[in-house]
Image (cartoon, rainbow, N blue to C red):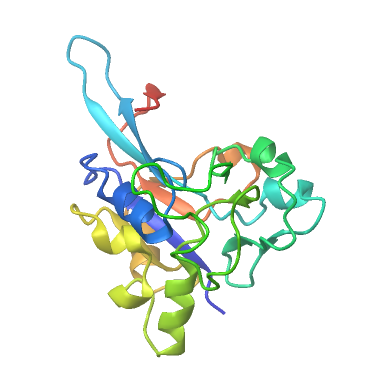
Amino acid sequence: MARWGMVIDLRKCIGCKACTVVCEETNQVPPNRWRRVNDCGISEYPERQRLFLPMSCMHCGEPPCLEVCPTTATYRRPDGIVDINYELCVGCGYCILACPYQARTIFHDESNFETGTKLQKPGLADPNIDRIGVCTKCNFCLPRVDAGLAKGLQPGLDPEASPACVISCSANALNFGDLDEPDSVVSRLIRENKTARLQEELGTDPSVYYIVDGMPFLECRES
């Protein structure tokens, strides 16, 4: 069984936010909800340098959101993807408070104000599921991954089977694949580079790694 994860090369990210735009279009969510890019400073004034930090659900091996969910709506699949059963979610918001990555959102509006399209219709495996009033988040484009696997495609290599943000990245900074496969792209990147995971000290075991060679973090702010 694969364990899907992502490696983000911070040396390449240019902050274009193509990943956030394609996430909005694919999943029909408002801007900067499921995926956002933080504009960070890594040196002090006056020689200020910039670093862009893409953020989304970390698909933790020990997800705190799962532990607090009173209805078992949040669950972790055997392949490591953390997802939400909308039919079980009651919108209590406990998982939002528990998530240290600010990766979860409850939509209380019926439409995407940017496009005017209905939130509950496009971008879902079952178009009849209503996402209003329940918790939502990035699921690594789970419908694309599963549909690709059913066709014999390889997520992370075949675009049709990979998350939309990965295939849309203009700088090729986002990489997706099987963390348990030694020869996968993500495993090689982790092995060959200095990487870090956010807030590892919390014991969440995130499935998203960042290549941080030569990039000391001094401060970070929301863009």
